[in-house]
Length: 227
Image (cartoon, rainbow, N blue to C red; front, side, top):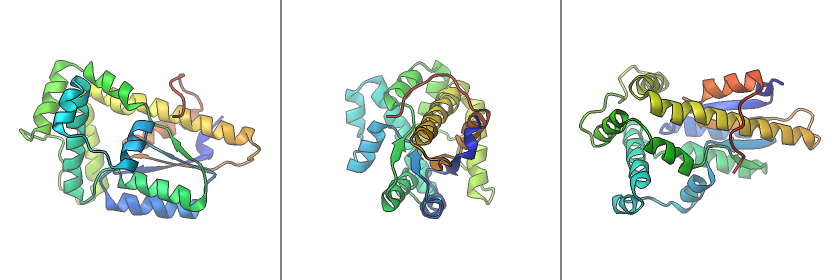
């Protein structure tokens, strides 16, 4: 079955005010039967409670905590560049789902599993990311193309070239997880008697093409359940 006919993917830049506004307007306009976001339970709770990990916190959690801290700092840097804190578009999706009274689904892979995979990254990639996060150099920073979305796509291509293992873990494998969870949402709506279910999914721009390809072919490998 072609699941893409039932799912509208909004590809966002996690640090773009334009994405935040687009998400809210689109959900109110589409009035879907369900809204899905690129979050897992831990990140959803952290966002709601505004939990922010400090360096000392990350050190107490060991290697996984340090990796999480480094990734958060990279996102903060991007947020400064584009004038918005990471996650605002996800908050907009949550607010819009509540406004129209439809279920909200958390479709991303568990952050603990993601961090465990990252900890097994090749030494070269971990060292390069550490240097970039410390501002020693930042080869994946945005270039002045003029269109922020084009700049973001360029950054994704650079990330894939420089970090093939991390790209697979952070993008391709999560595409499979999120696509499968979206299929489960559609199947649940159909089983509940909804003849033409409509789901709006809010994910990072880099995930949009991959998830759409999987939904279009209508199958994926067993990965995880909706959190």
